[in-house]
Image (cartoon, rainbow, N blue to C red):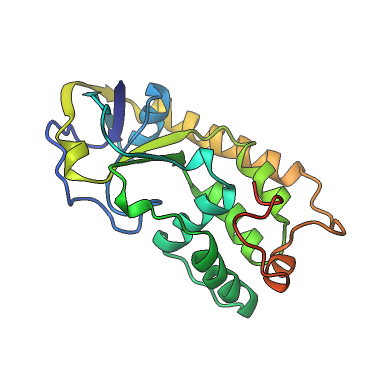
Length: 220
């Protein structure tokens, strides 16, 4: 497969053990198969970027595709790694319960694939654990935004399969507005959702009260 990494730098030799520990799925090398997404992720309002292109042989590597699991599994991995302040008692208890009951054994895998939790997606997750939206509404929200999947290399065995095949400079004037527009659309779709209370829906209070587990048919 060909994968892309958006950065303000050209990275010919990605190093295992580098990168922020509080990224979505922990420390790793974050890439995508979508060239346009990599271009958007490479720039900010203040600087141009580069997309780095790699040939990647993932055969015989262990892969966890979070998109094949429940949204709750994705959320659990996010809650374990992303840094955010949880102050409300409900949100604190929700975080502890989700981590205990729904966290997959993701650290054993060479590669993780899953939704990218930018600011929009992260705000959806915060609303859910705070009891603002139901689980069903959370599932709908994260599938609305079209914010793309990321391919995250987690172990040295994965890094050993990377081969740098080139880079391309990316203009912030072109690609930062595209990035902003994608996020804006995701937020607009979320705000236009019907978020009225739905009797019988899986709000976090119901999940806690009934001690719902990952094998429950309502968790998808």
